Image 1 (cartoon, rainbow, N blue to C red):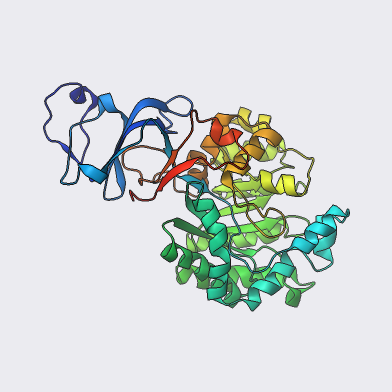
Image 2 (tube, helix red, strand yellow; image 1 turned 90 degrees about the vertical axis):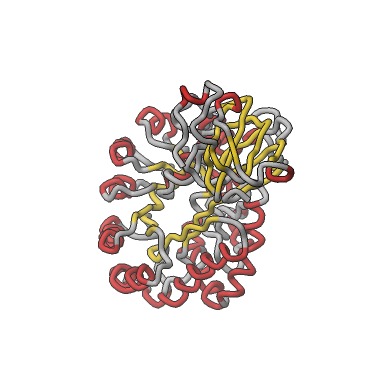
Length: 423
C-alpha cells in the first residue's frame, strides 16, 4: 500500500488508514537511513510493520493513521524509551566448519607465524580434513552454538562461506548445512562459494588445475543447485594469484553471480583493484591496500569490509588505510570473520569495539558498518540494513541510554529483543 505524502500526514484528514499488524511505539530510533544525518536518530519513534515489512518508521508525530485487526494488546509494543536499530548484519563469516585450531593458537603464542603454520600443513587445510570427515547434520549441530551467539546480540542476517571442503561433495555439504541453519533459526542466511580458499592436498603443486576444477566444474554445478548467492576467493601469497582469481571471477560472471574477495590481508597482491573491475560487492581485510586499489573500489561502489577480529587475533600491526578509504568515500563495513583459525569471534558487538579501538573508527562508522553498509556488502541494501518503509522488519531493541554504548561495552550484551521479519 502506498504511504501518504508527508503533507497529508500533518492534517487530521486521511484518504485511508495504513494497514499494519504490529507496532513498536515510545521508542528512540537509529534508522541508519541515508537521507538523514549521522545515524538517523529519532527521539519519538514509531515503527509499524505488515506481513514482515516495515510500512512506517519515523516520528510518531508524522505517522499516518494506522489500522488493522490486531492493533491492540500484544501487537502494540511499548518500548519504554528503548533504542531500536536495524537488525545487525554479519557480512563475512566462515561459520560452518568442524573442529577447532586451538593448538595452532598455542603455536602462534610461541612465535610461529600464520604462514609457517599453513605451509606445514596446518591452517585452512587442517580444518578441511575435519570438515570433510563430518556429516551435514554434524556440521549443522557444530555451527548452531556459534550462530546462536550472534543472534543473541541482535544479528538477523549472516553471510556464511564454504571453503573448508575444497572438493565438490564437501563444498556442497557445507553450503547445504548453511542453508539448513535458516530452517532451524529465525535468521536470513546468505551463502558464498569460496572454493578458491586454499589448495587441497590432492592438488599439491597443481594450483591451476584446481582453479580449473573450481571455475569449470564445482561453481556451475553448485550454482545450478541453488546453493550459491555469491562467489569469493583468497587472493594472497599463500592463496591464489591474480590470474587464478580472475578465472574464478569469469566463471562467476558467466553464472550471473556477484563476487567478493579476500584481498590485501598479508601482502599487496592488487586483488582489490581486480575485484573492482568485476564490480565486486566487497573486498575484505585490506590491511595492505594501496591508493590504486582504493580508487578502483571507490569508482565501482565496492564495500570495504574490515575484519578487526583477525587483526587482533593474529596480532597484526599493519592497519588498513582508513583515512584514505574515508576520503575516497568507500563504504565501510565490519564483520566478525568468524573462523576457527584466525578469528574465532562470535560477537559482532565486540568486532565493532575492536574496529573503534584498533582502527580508530567512529561510533557512527561502526554502527553503519554492521547495518547499512553490511547490507550493501551482501547486495541486500534494498531489503535490509535501515529502518525505512519497504524494508524487511528486522529490528534490534536495546537497553541502552545512547547508541555509543553498543560500541563502548566489552562483553556486556544490552539486547532487549530481536525481531526478524516482524516477529
